[in-house]
Structures are given as structure tokens and as C-alpha cells.
Length: 220
Image (cartoon, rainbow, N blue to C red; front, side, top):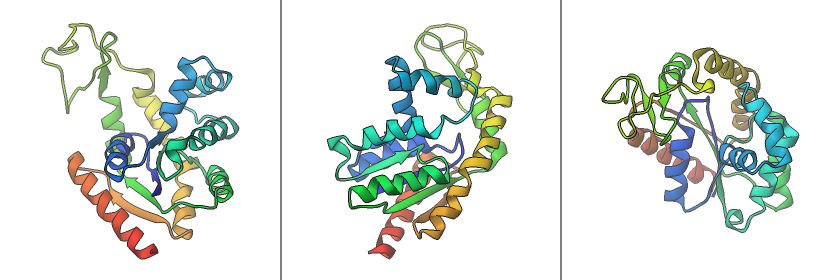
């Protein structure tokens, strides 16, 4: 199965991608993971990508496309994959379509995770991270035992730059302008399935699996 997850930052795409990929026995291909690997490896593409990521902007298409094409060429993605974070705009969607056409295949389903923007701001701006162990807390949903201190290390928690409210709102604005049009694009392609990405993780997963099943059966 070849699938794409679409949704705003904070919709839970990463969590659902991990669960769904495991249950569907396909690799999770996350642009976030690809970017981090290139950034930590100090590659030319990684250095260019980091400049944009630090500002909360989207990485230019030519950089992202090159990273994704390389990843999809790996043997483990030959029989299927679940893409998280790509495509982010219609030109990238066209590029992906071309990549898959070269392999004589195409997407089976595009799953949209829909969530209210104010909920996204609340989810992301409330996150706090430990600088030592990396654990992530939430001031409301998953607070530490001692306010502002990591349960494991006792270190003072901090708010990552891309979790600050102004950065989150900027990311949402970028999403509305550049990524949201993908919904109409894939709806016209007959590939779109939309679910509400609110509530417990397991409930969102159940909705996702049901929506994928319906779409696959309709296309068979």
C-alpha cells in the first residue's frame, strides 16, 4: 500500500504514521526524519534545509524532492510506504506522481487528519522539553511532577523555538497557503479520505484504519 498523510502541524501525523505503518507492514517515510538525518549528517541538503526549518518556513521543493526521491528508491519502500510530511504543496504532489509513474505505480489513498487551528496552537505551544534526556512534556496534558523540571533529570525544561506561539501561528499560516490546497488536489484525484484528528490516539487510529479500508475497497 502506498499512502500519504496530510494535515496541519500538531495534528498527530507522526504518531499515526508510526502506528499505521507498523500495522500495514510498510515503512514510514517521514520528511522530518529525512531532514534530521541530513542536518545531523552535515550534508549540503541538510545545511540548506536547516536555515528554513529554524524559521518555521517550508524547505524549498528542490531540496525536499531530492531527499524524498532518494528515500523512496530504497529497497524497503519498493512494495509500499506511508509518507508523512510530503508532499507539502501541489507542485510536490505532481512531482511525487511523476516519481511513482516512473515506477509504474501510484498512490492508493491520501488520509487527511483534520483539527481546529486553535487546538493546534494549544497542543504545540504547551510543549516543554528536557535539554538532557529529550523528554517532551505538556503544561496541561502531560505536566512534570515539579513545575518546570524534568521528572528524570531534574533539569529545567525549555520551550523549543518552533513551539513558541508566534512560530506555531506562522507555521499554520504557511500550511493554509501552501499545503491545504493538497486536499482539493487529492479529492479531485479520487484519493482523499478525511477524519477528525481529535480524541485519544487509539480512537484516531481506529478512524484512520476504517477510512483507509473504505477507500481501498472503493478503489478495488
